[in-house]
Length: 121
Picture (cartoon, rainbow, N blue to C red):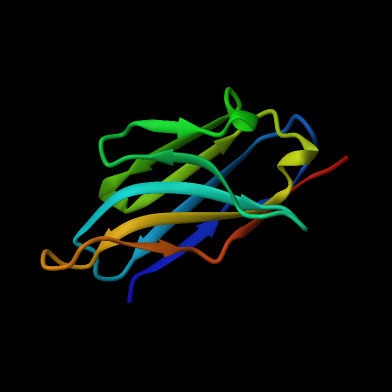
């Protein structure tokens, strides 16, 4: 069974930094697009950043210039470097990967369980 596990969340002061990691494990043939999402209390889940299989990245406007998404395909791992954190960044952050377990199957979305990021003074 494919599993995604996020790590790196925690409590940080405004202006601080955190690096989130998401590692996929299990039977994996290929991972295509990846992305980070977040959900604040009382809010809908929103896209934060994406990275394609070719390494192209996109960012939501609120995090542009502050967050950097990256991937290490050899490790089946995705990262989110978060700098200059603001209180409004407080949310549960989820990773999502498009994964095919073998050659005969199309990719499907897999989600991690999330990691809490709290930005507060």
